[in-house]
Length: 325
Image (tube, rainbow, N blue to C red; front, side):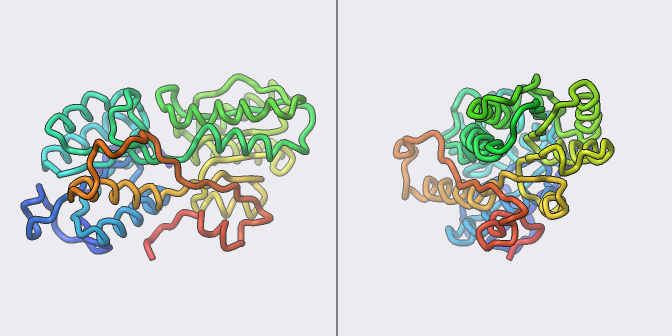
């Protein structure tokens, strides 16, 4: 998604409906309130995550305070996070793109004993109750092994976010590790393009000019994938140079069907949202003690979607949605 100005949107959700706002568990008949903060609030990925969070909130009879920003910029999300914390939610989940910048504010929130879970991210000091996410390194490593079996010779270009994003760096490094099983492919220096499709496009164009033997481009986020696809199209390399992306937003799936992508690594954002709210609700109700949560990381399913399997029931279950069912 494009980087934009701050656009915070807050919704109090009980089940799948939304109305009003809540500052604490003292509202709505004493129900507990769980806050959920994400970047890119118009992105179908986070929309799918929200659907899972809503369903878990309904099942566990808690209020859900969902807020997000239009961008992935740390300053934007920090502003929203501080605003949410001022409402004193009983528990909170958040997704952050800079895994170090939010440590201090997370400690501030948890200082009074409130539980905090991260979804599709982590805090670099591992202070969250649990991180619920994809095995970024393992999924990318295994995808690289599987998708390069029939590619020989040439080089591979990897585009990722800023170095502070540990999740996306794990995707990049995992793919690089998986390429070792091929033996005939050379990995070029990893390029940091953020979530900027224009920068990704110019980076790929320059790389193609300097390295005519590029056989595959791997991107760790949708914006980088869009930029890479544009550059390959301009160079008349669509379908000739393999493009592998991360995530399965509707637009990416359309591009896959057109042959612009050869494969997409799909995550389970619905499950992340559902599991994060469920865990927080269990802790707040006393069903689960924080000391009982001994695993700092809980991995959710992932799947490689290709043009050959995109219309199967399994692949479709991994495509992100613009609206909840």
